[in-house]
Amino acid sequence: MPDHVRSDLPARLARWASRETTAGALLLAAAAIALLWSNSPWRGGYAALSEITVGPAAWHLDLSLSGWAADGLLAIFFFVVGVELKQEFVTGSLRRPKEAAVPVLAAVGGMALPAGIFVAVVLLLGDPSALGGWAIPTATDIAFALGVLAIFGRGLPVALRVFLLTLAVVDDLLAITVIAVFYTDSISWGPLLAALAVIGAFALVARARWARWWLLLPLALIAWALMHASGVHATIAGVLLGMCVAARPLHGEDTSRALQYEHTVRPISSVIALPVFALFSAGVNLVDGEGIAALLSEPVLPAIAIALVLGKIVGVLGVTAAVTKLTPLRLADALGIRDLLPVALLTGIGFTVSLLIAELSFPDSGHTDAATLGVLAGTAVAATLAAVSLRWDAHKVRKADMNEDGLPDADDRTIGTDGEWPETSDDR
Image (cartoon, rainbow, N blue to C red; front, side, top):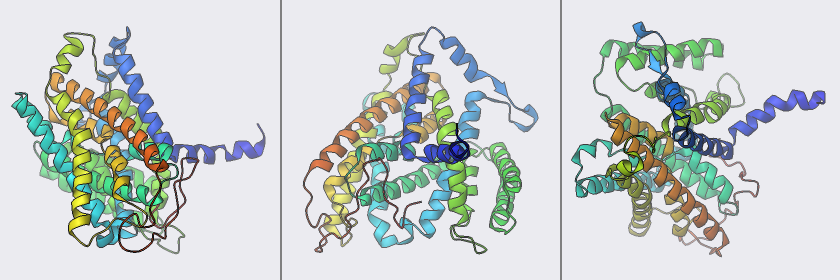
């Protein structure tokens, strides 16, 4: 291999790992491997691997490998979400409330309707014990959804990606709040206050001129361990740490620390954290015991699948249509109501956060496995319909004033033919 190619290899790998198409493909591959392995003749090995316990019991860190994936590796993903949220609030699409109002309200509708449909279905089918899973179909998987958009959204306005990103980060912010408030059984205030103190120290170091990874990483690990010991789900530490990072350049730097840290951590999240979590979370055994027949009889499965697809469509489209028709608020330039059908379907891709909430919702494996299968089924249907609707939308003739604000659309930028998009002021 030539020297110049060898020297450029790490940078090329980092760019590949940071692509949204890569993250979506690896998530899908990991989930497929988990399903195949957990139902193969070697399924005993999958179960044994998931249950291997690692870590010191004295610090309450004697977790199974599946537990480390959900509590530990997923905190890396939530750190990326945290810096994304910080960047959006300070310099991105959420810094202008009037412009962000439509996708923010769409996010609220896209969470409320699925939760309502889930509750209605499980009650209608006679399983009130499953009501604890009401939040499972409310989440949107940013990485997976943006990956589908990157692949199938070629030729559509870049504003569609900005709308989806804004909606998804608000969705994640609300999902994080739901996890912290509704899925925390008890709180140990000593470790929690200590975790917040360490997060404060992390914030000071992250803003200092002399900030270095070998100072920040130990603080992050300590904050995570204390948050875990407090009883609050440890992934919340990742979000808070990300939100502490400065979103504007400091000390004469060209880019903000938030962007720098996101670009450093995102490849780890996309290539390691998310696929490993999916590998341990998506493995539903359909062959042992009563098998798939028992799972299909659980009301939680159709409740989640229907809520992820139908609930997101009605919630996102209904709220957006009502807001744009009944108030002065409008969609972004070059974006029309018809463009939001694929967006609504993309938000039905729950996956990562939905799988996490499914694990937190039920004490028994029957409900948990059925919920996992419901998430996978709903996500598969939503992703397939989103891909079809994106290509349908891309081939339809566009009007001169798609957002119907009385002014001709001036933004003619489109998602590129290579699955990427031109940089915008709101892109990271």
